[in-house]
Image (cartoon, rainbow, N blue to C red; front, side, top):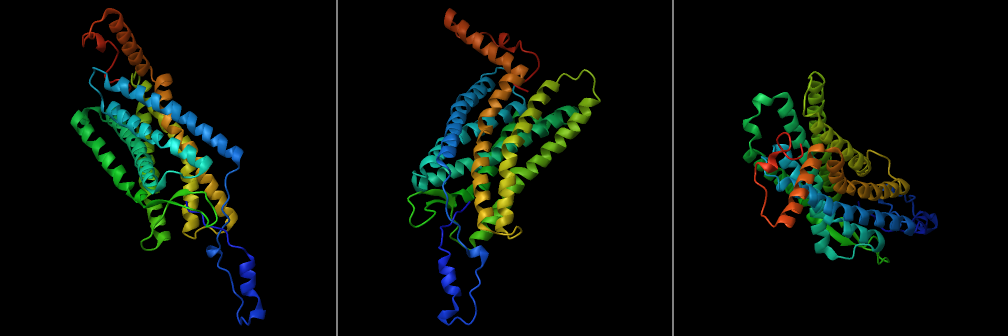
Length: 358
């Protein structure tokens, strides 16, 4: 979001003064009126900063724990386990951008142009990859439950790894516009710096609208449509099946998706309103412009909460994950007491079912 500096309204009154021999009154274009830059209330800024710090403190160890449990499993990982592992990487990388946001809320952007580009690139990449990996999980659950006999080849480990590489490549490609981010001043007489996109080629407004279109489609609407479709068909199949033992995994994934919507939907709605405002589909005025800018900042902080919430869901909702984590901790404690390398592979496979988490 871009914030422009304030211009005194007396300037326009002077232009409209007919005593200056103006034959035609000067009519101000409301889209060209610059809005006054306003900082967040200090108390609100402190609250948001503390919230971001708490998210960071929870997100890093939580995602490291989930990744460790998945990677140290001596069982064959299912495609969903592989996607979840990459999801923890995306969440962890996104969490690394949080300290920069926390400082920027209080003091503005202090880290220069290069870090502005780098942090924006990391955030946008994992913005895309997070929901894309959730979509991959929903597709895998659909294939496992609805088309179990037809999806054996597509669920091989190598195919899953190649799909993960494709998701990361797509996420990086879609995030490339973040390289246009720069540290700028919202007004000439302000020492406050912002890290915003700065398109200096062609029409900046058209660039922003086009990029927002990609963000709305590939970063939310398309993956959300895939998840809703796959889970709707899967749940319909589960309701017709008796004694199906994989409903626990479904519970974990559905809750993960619901939490994702809770965290990210407000941000996307705010961004859609901002896009419509830029495309002249919503009437423009400074009060509305300011309200949307504030909403984007606040909902962005809520969206970052998602980076620490998934590990909590795995720990408290996923029964298989809890069993695997207890087994790994017990094995590590036994190794320390007895000074032996590891239990045998057969001992580590006593947990029921295949896979580590799902």
